[in-house]
Length: 397
Ligand SMILES: C[S@@+](CC[C@H](N)C(=O)[O-])C[C@H]1O[C@@H](n2cnc3c(N)ncnc32)[C@H](O)[C@@H]1O
Image (cartoon, rainbow, N blue to C red):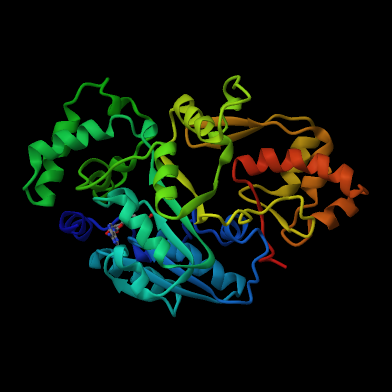
């Protein structure tokens, strides 16, 4: 753990300037409140109750700041604890919170292996951390021990194929440069990388750019003291061993092989996801939500017409217009492009989404009985939900 701490003391990650908080909020997954509701609380959380949050391995604060700021803007109570090994990362995260006037966050320096010493939590964010532990299973187990009943985890762990080229370079740089001070390792590694053949799998991998964005990014990607990737079946297996179960990946369509090939009907769900990951070849990290093993009703299901749908990252009226005109709707997920497959007749339903209306109210507005609505909405849910664009939450009511 000492080497990992040293790295993140020298290069707090990601590289952030607290002054930039005046200009923009960095958003992403996990840890958007509507996503948390959708994947952990079946879209029905009572937001008048304080959300007890642990940000485990919070780094310079992206997940922390997003969640604290969005809860503040929504006027909803939250009790947030930030925990990280690195004091340098914590200093940046604290300065970012201060720059935004976000108060009441508890900042702790320490290991997530002792997460339960800080309390129990309704929601735990652990983004880009567990794959840096010498034994990730102990990290999953430690977070599980800090989970309050009915709560859940938002996670990102690295995936192998989208990171092709990274691990041979990490191994080579480790063998060549171990023992040098971090700044020297960085300078030498940059020089070596410059001279590698243009066809090295890392140089051909257009999915990775962190090493070009900042020194902290270069260090995190190519000089990491401890780093491994999980194929989806390995991730699900470590979760099962440590008392977790997947609620859902943020973009489940990426794990559906039938979008890419004909798939035998009898193939089991885990093999299906594994095959999808192998066929796509572009997944760099698995991003999703997990809950306690056996907690099956965590994810929102659109058969519950009292749920309130939200469209994420797109304006409902604009999307409805394109769908009504029978246009193909392109989606850009990093370098991967997809096309949404939506029939014209769902346009009116999409246009009804405003973050406040329930599904029942949208059905009524479209003059549809629940049965007819259910059939049409299932297509909207599968397609938009498949790419993480449709979430259910009463946070805006
Ligand atoms: C790649 S950064 C991710 C930061 C942040 N979660 C994000 O997504 O931007 C990994 C962070 O995990 C922290 N970390 C690594 N091992 C840890 C542990 N055992 N306990 C607490 N923090 C840890 C590091 O100090 C570093 O700040």
